[in-house]
Image 1 (cartoon, rainbow, N blue to C red):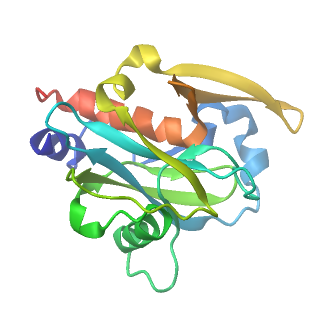
Image 2 (cartoon, rainbow, N blue to C red; image 1 turned 180 degrees about the vertical axis):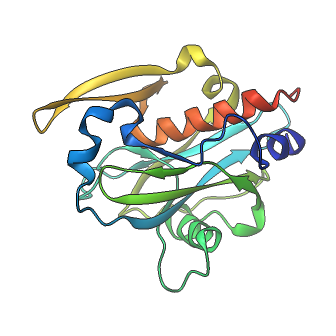
Amino acid sequence: MRSWLEQALKEGNPAARGTRSDYDLNLNVKLADLKGQKMRPAAVLVPIVDHADGATVLLTKRTDHLSKHPGQISFPGGAVDPVDVDSVAAELRETEEEIGLDRSFVDVAGFLDEYLTGTGFEIKPVVGLVKPGFTLELEEQEVAEAFEVPLDFLLDRRNHAKESAMWQGVERHYYAMPYNGYRIWGATAAMLVNLCDVMEAAKVPR
């Protein structure tokens, strides 16, 4: 798994774009939404758990009472604070705070494309290979649940749906990956599509 990730995330992968966004599927609303908007730096961990019987991706479900993105499926992470020296420091700190995953279990493998959201965040997705055997302690005010999805499921293009919904009077399109009752969609799903793109292009046997 480590070798495959190194190949997928190294500079020069033809599937890497540098930047992706909520507007890749919504170019018609991009200029109106981003006009005058100041982007805030953020970082998330894309945690690939290296189980002997098959890798998984660790995801979280946000609590329903949060003011932003309540109940949504997400990666652990958040805004880059002044105390953080870089995006890696930010996502490791946020991951420990949100789900209690000790950074000693995380081996940073590289980065996906930066991701711009319509809510004003410029997210740096940091891919980490996670050693099994960890324990989690969820921040119950922010995280309702943590769960794992088989990497094979997420890398299967047949599980990448494109859906749409009306928001502020405009039809918006987004990726979705329903899994066992969980609705993985939006920015999280789009970043998983990015992971699929680069890993597929690396063409290293699993």
